[in-house]
Length: 173
Image 1: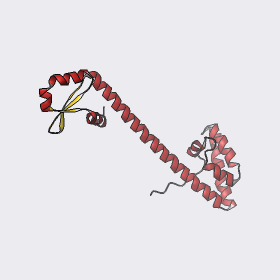
Image 2: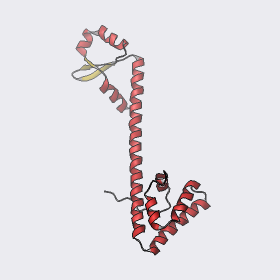
Image 3: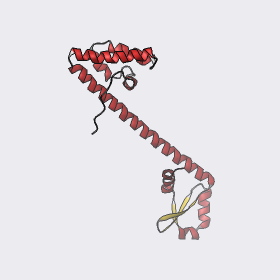
Image 4: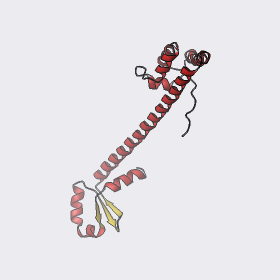
């Protein structure tokens, strides 16, 4: 158990001053038998912990679940940030495509098509992505630009993660 887990457990325990603990030891044992761990304090600081082994294991398990949940929430938030950055970069590329002259558009799309062909030739990517990107790259530029930032029937995130375009890095703010 890490230090953070222990702190969470300690913060949630009922506390009793040491002087009262000395005077009411029988009452403390009754509370322990009822499954209520206690922290004994002196001058406002925890000096001892009283718990049955079963109660302690239950608190450890609950605390570790809370830490795991927090870690998963952080990971989800990080993944959402990464997807948002990918979406922003694809949106910038879509604007670049739409505002470029036809020759520049063709060069960008041809480069992306060449990368998709390399994926296919070297078996570097799933056929799902290869087929979808081939279909998208065959569409007119306005439709391609729109699809690059859309959900694409539930494939948008995956396609942006496996993109044939060379995207400019996100500017740091």
